[in-house]
Structures are given as structure tokens and as C-alpha cells.
Length: 290
Image (cartoon, rainbow, N blue to C red; front, side, top):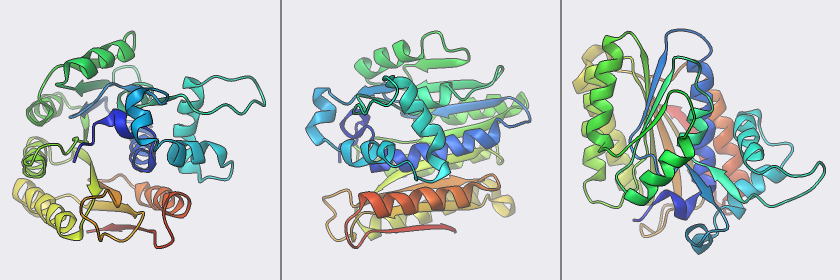
């Protein structure tokens, strides 16, 4: 499966991911020690929805397009809608299609306090160059040509030793057959470095067996790293349709380890709206703790 960010920017999966990530950031930056955020697969940082890659799928219209048109959407989407509006200025009262969409790097960088830090890892030279450009001039934000699987545990260890809190976003493209095992290994290494780290994992939903296996591997990794102190795991999933065709992305899910108080209700509201407004007749949403 090719889930390069540009192909799917602004789609239903981005709505779930970014609503939850922004809610996590709101809570983690409300008070307390400085925050380090590591993004293992950062992408370009922002996307032209009129470009060739985005137009190849046209998924944004049924995602961010519908969200921006819904004045009654849940409050959990407020920060995302505001960020999209800033990136797409328009005259008062005008109704202009969304042309640019902010990726996780831009959304996170805009949420940092003085003293907080964001590190976006990207290995593709073209996306890495775009990431550096999109983060230029943003205090505390760094784009690095680096392997996110290895960088996240190392940076978590450094941050924990310095008394900083940690949020790691794991959002791979799932182009490689070893992405799922790598995800479990990285989760184990991050929690071994800092059992209190908040780990947010995005995954596509294609078939139930793959998803159940991932949940089991993440739980096992948490237990192996932290033992009796293993973190809670919040799962928020959206199924646009039944998981009957493993060749399609039938939905997506966000897993959050060490979720701050209050995140579950907001994730549930986001998932429910997406299922109702972006899914087929049999769409469903489910948010729970393992």
C-alpha cells in the first residue's frame, strides 16, 4: 500500500489524525515541562490540493472539503479548521475551495510554546526539501533527513534525561512489508526510554486480521517495555465500510499510548463525525481503551 502523504492530504484519515494530534498538543502544552515532539515520517509539511499527486485521488473534497463546509462540526475540529483557514485566506463571506492543506509538521510547529521542540524525520529528498522550506523560520522546529524509526527512541531518551515530556507521532507510509514490525519495535524502544512518553500511532484499516495483529503487537511492546507500569492504550477507529476488501483502505485508526485525560471524548466525537459524513451506509466509529 502506498500511503505517501501527498496522495491523501486532507482526506478522512487526516481529519482523524490531525484532530487527535492537535487535541494532544493542546493538553500537553497547557502547562508543565517543555515538550519534545518527534514525527517519524513527517512528509513535506504542507500540500497543494490542486497538485498532480493530490488530484490523482481527489480525496480531500470528501474530507477537509466537507469539514470546512460544516459549521456545526464538533469543537474537536476547531483547531484544524482554523489552521486550514489561515493557510487559505479568502475575502469575508467568500466560499473558496481549500487549495492548501497543512500536514502534521506545520500543525505541530504552530502549536509549540517557547522552549518546546519539534523534530520531523523524512528520508525522501523531495519531501525533505519541502519540509525544510515549510518549517523555515519556525522557532523550535527542525526538519532532519533521518530514519524516524531509529531517531524517535534516541530523541526520547535525550528528552527524558533533560526532564522534558515527549510526544511521538508514528505515521509511516506502509509501503514496506516490515512497517508493522518496525512500528512495534519502535514503540517498545520509545517506552523503554521513557515510560511516560505519549505515543500516537496512525494506521490504515484494510482487514480485521492485520488490525488485530497490530493491536496485539503494540500491547505486547508496551508490556515488555514497562511491565506493570505499561501505559493505557486508547484506540479510535473509523470504518468507512466493512473490512471486506483487504486491497482497499476501508478505514483508519489512531492509537494513543499514555493518553492525557479528556482525549478519549474528543477522539470519539471526531471519529463519529467522520463516519457519519465521510463513510458509506455501513460506516461506523469506535473509540475505546484496550
